[in-house]
Amino acid sequence: MLEARKTAPASPGCETTTVRQPGLLLTDHHFEVPLDHTAPEGERISLYGREVVAADRAGAGRDRLPWLLYLEGGPGFGAPRPVGRAGWLDRALDEYRVLLLDQRGTGRSTPATRQTLPLRGAPGRQADYLAHFRADAIVRDCELIRRRLTGGRPWTVLGQSYGGFCAVSYLSHAPEALDTVLITGGLPSLDADADTVYRAAYPRMERTSLAHYARYPGDAATVRAVVRHLAVHEEVLPDGTRLTPAAFQQLGILLGGGDGSHQLHHLLEDPFAPTPDGPRLADAFRERVAAVLSRAASPLYALLHESIYAQDGRATDWSAHRIRTEFPGFDAEAAAAGDEPVLFTAETVHPWMLDTHAALRPLRRTAELLAERTGWGPLYDAERLARNTVPVAAAVYHDDLYVDTAHALATARAIGGLRTWVTDEFEHDGVRTGGRRVLDRLLRLARDEAV
Image (cartoon, rainbow, N blue to C red; front, side):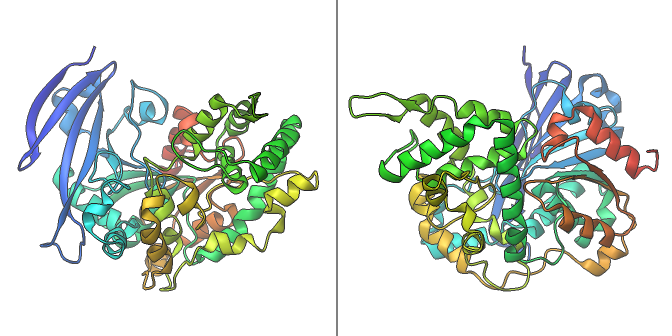
């Protein structure tokens, strides 16, 4: 049973709500930060964070607990919503009070969606607004929040995936704010542009696709049958997304998780239903596909994805789409027609998504302007990272679908004192699926306690 109460406002005009769950005390925090940190007196946006404390540590000793800030992957996803004490959070709560931050534009922070972005005005103004939503701004947000919550004391940061990219940017710009940094599947290349990132990504996507078919050989024929059907029939998902062969390939996003291949296999069961007009995609199948492909709750994942690799001033110019032409094996219709395995894609964004994906159609011109945008500045300071003295430990997954392992290890060598745990026991979501073990291993590495 939940128990709620009001506590003192986190900032003027904002009330803070505290609720209890079994084993947890959850407290809402609301913060106002500048949209543009170079113009602190200008427009402000709201950020939301959920403080989590173990119920047995929520008494007088709560204020003495050190803080751990969790940064979620993405870009464009809100922080996890805990239900009880489980997984990495269970280990963290042994010694920390945890802040689960909804990064700008996500979750309960000031939203940035197809419904809200038109309030900014024309697409050009929307694109200018979203240009302030990269890791450098997120780090500055965190710094304002840290000073308010910790009284200026350093805190520990745990960054998952894109949250790790933000953590490396944090090490570059404000290492004095950090007690320890823990990174899971999120060591970015310090200097690779988007084209380099995607040239490394397509071979990984091919390996992962073929590994799935080796595990579930029957899926190859099923996928070919679906692609052949989509090549000649229009199929619309319940959310209004048009399912084309290329859009169907994006189900490969599932393959980066520990149980993703199994999830994909189950999704592919019985994709067709008999109808008076012949076989069509079954409603249940379309519903499950829509749940995977929808960008209604996370449009920033598409709008800003390539910008997280942009640092040299050049436009990204639909990098993943351009580089795809160098890998003709990803032509789904040609593969299906030739009885070849249809390869899945993963974290790639394409201009045709602005037509197929219902939640992105109203943002077409905004997305185009972001792809054309120049002047993206650096996110990392290689010289400062080389001199790093903050304890850093990173889990690097052996053949991570989303973050290139070679790029990650090169960055690990470039950051002073960083210790790596390279493992093929987990996939990209190891911090979620590994329970206490992953976070515990990283903490022991950072503290020189691991053997």
